[in-house]
Length: 208
Ligand SMILES: Cc1cc2nc3c(=O)[nH]c(=O)nc-3n(C[C@H](O)[C@H](O)[C@H](O)COP(=O)(O)O)c2cc1C
Image (cartoon, rainbow, N blue to C red; front, side, top):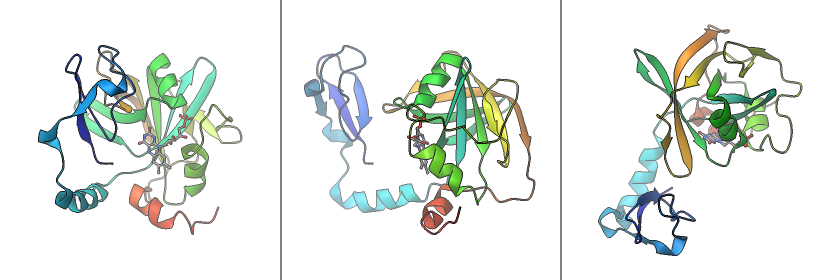
């Protein structure tokens, strides 16, 4: 995941990523129009330390859910964080290709169900296949709050948000949705939350 700056030779738009975008989101020029900008290139000797430093950034794991009318969907996400406390606001990074992205864009709401240390089964169910292939919520106990987005009843708790108009950031492959927290509750006071690092260390040996 080494980002490079790719500059559109047609309009000057700069995209950051491993590869240039398929087409320029500003002028529509094709991938061939993009050139790397040498000033931001990462020196080979820097790479190893940079990747290792990325691995030290800590995250939790969540099911981010949303709705489209009567339909609901959710996905696993580690890129959720509280961005301000007053007002209470969350930011979440969701891949453009995901069904959850489509639903959040349509409904302007999302809920984050907070996963506990034993929720490997939920990560497998919500994190590896799209809701375009099957109904991820079938057989999963849910509850609903103010926004109507489904909340996993057996999770540690949840926060639900209304996406703020004009504050969604296009981060290349992902959108960063920023939302005001409008509801939430803690269901399990004492359980330890699942972290991204803990999941990766335990995923192959976890039961259930
Ligand atoms: C541990 C883990 C963390 C993930 N974190 C993110 C994330 O932060 N953002 C994201 O867009 N996808 C993330 N994903 C991938 C999505 O959960 C996955 O692509 C999902 O199948 C998308 O489902 P959907 O198309 O039903 O929305 C993660 C997956 C796993 C297993």
